[in-house]
Amino acid sequence: MVEEHSMRLIFCSLILMTSLLQASELKKVSLAVGEWPPFIASKPSLQGICVNILSEAFKTQGIEVMFEFTSWKEAFENAKNAKIDGTPLWFYTKERAKQFYYSEPIITHKIVFFHLKDHEEAQWTTWKDLAKYRFVGTVGYLFSPKISPAFEDKTLTLHRTVNDEVGLRMILKRKADYTINDIDVGYYLIRTLLKEKDASAFSHTKKPIDDEVTSHFLVSRKHVESHSQRVLKAINAGLKEIKSTGRYDELLKKSRSPKM
Image 1 (cartoon, rainbow, N blue to C red):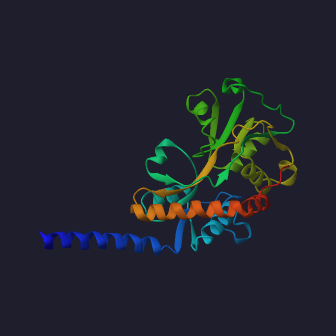
Image 2: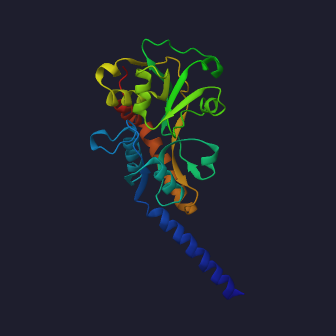
Image 3: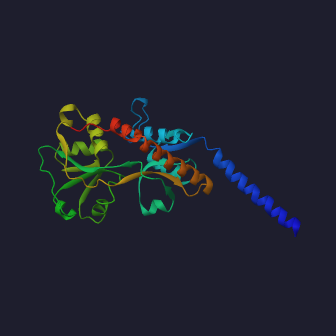
């Protein structure tokens, strides 16, 4: 009995030591991401808001960040299957929460309608008030938890396009009335995808669709629990640190897209 008890103690001690070792050895994290400027971009000249925020947040915890750029679909799958430490920036959904742990919010987004300046500005109390308009959006985008159900249940009509440029040009040709995006992302796309004359024709609704939706860093539930919690603890502590010093607001202001 004494020998058996001793073996159990040794076994438990080994498990504890392994967990502590794993936690203490976290010096680098690899994150899977796609292109979503101005938040995330592979070009050194435009790394984006999120890249800078995450890098500095993890740095306060003594952790180096490696960004692996791929398609968003592959980034999600690699993160879900624990092939990588995590992936930003994702909105909360109940389905994703079954597969991932969520960090504290990284970015709070302002989602708006984009339209031509000479087009009437949409006014609404309920989504049904917008039923007369034609909306366009890129395949695979989750615009906002608030308005997405209105497209899913066909309250509003949405034409999906292969990319953002096609949607913007549909609006220029008056084949669509509105597109939807984060205000910073929308103006970045308008400035970079269109000629100056065409870009200057765009504006956005003063009333936002959603100004409370947040994006997060996701860590797969398939990771060893101690590793998942170590990564989450590090990013949450890092975000808290750069927010308390004012560095977060400084990075955010520096990277925000100018409006038209």
